Image 1: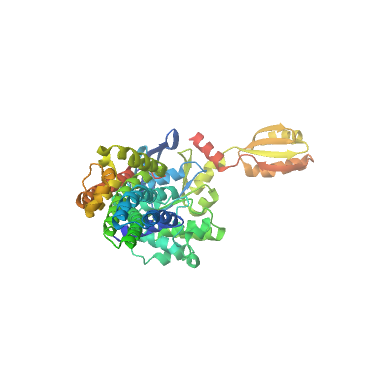
Image 2: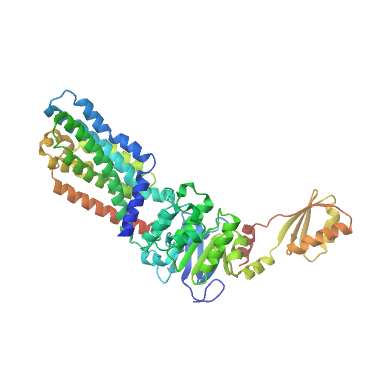
Length: 310
Length: 248
């Protein structure tokens, strides 16, 4: 197996030229990568294809093209491998009439495991006090944690987590992230998220996906670096925009400047430096700046740029 | 085996929870209420005739298919609708074990409701006539027909979210309409499987059931064999669909 940023050295999950389309819509396009022990973040904006990819890996969706190897087998042909796989789906898929404890116990019974770990799994997601309440009365974050407990309880070798932090509060999030990191010491953990900061806190390795394609891969620093030379558009409001435009054009960090009424639209490759240049220029020529905000800093636009560049 | 029983238990709670059981329970009272009202001041033989011509027809042509349609189509349909199917499918269980457990649960639920409905109607008749001969045949007949309907509608419920609508068309256009008008089509009618078992166990009822029975000979053995065959085909078909189709 090739060892490049998209491929893990000791893969337990191999995605080989997988495409998945639903009618005319292409959700995943010719994507190849692999995952091994450790925590890998699957990062991308909503609708990027992360959920589809995870469901293809889990064997819930059949690839339109390409193949999946999960622990050395095709999950759609060999359900016995699910003994070693845990999945936390993104949707609110729980049985509302069951209590959290019954739900987790149900997961163990379906997996042919004993129920000895049920209390530990519930404790790991901090649901001890609510364990005997029906899931229908749970908040989204609590249901999310119950799903995580149901996935953890069978002690899987591969854990697939689709946006597992959705709806959780900051304290629960920190606790779940710590749990995932501990689990990833010996297991393959794949976590999808559309929040860069979230992935940054969890994952050592990141695969960025957009429009069903792999946009970037590597450690978090590499992804950050890949993003560093992306031109950002910044909107600056001032009482005299044309007077500021001149000195800014002379700056190396500024790629282009346009004026529209009292607004300057600046394109830069170094957002951080621009944040200091603009106030300095304004002070030098004694012009007041009333607004400064990035116009196009969404993760989606960043990833689109990365895809175009590949 | 524990896993299968766990699926059966959870599915039973899923199927019979909320208002569903109340609505189906009220529907199930219909044959008993009708036979109680129609047999007042009737002789035992006339009451027996009414039971077969009215209560049994309501039970097998309305209560039973509607109940089994709702419960059978929900067995896998609810899991698909609620997104919990993925929870079941990422388990080390053969797909046929999952669909088998689902059918067993749907059958227990449907047979429980309809057999109770039939037993209530039979009891109403028995109170009037002091003759309990209809009780066991009614329960056996409804239980077998419930299994057939649950099997077919379980597969339908997995295939489409419009299973209830399609099932209603089947029940009221095909079963109650076309197949009644053309006795030669009796073989491809599910309620008649239960009815042949009922008539096989209660031969004196056949003279009142010649129209719904059509060309079919009464008998429990044949009905049981057909029920097992339909159940097996349904379990394997649903398992194959779970393997081949995407779970979104």
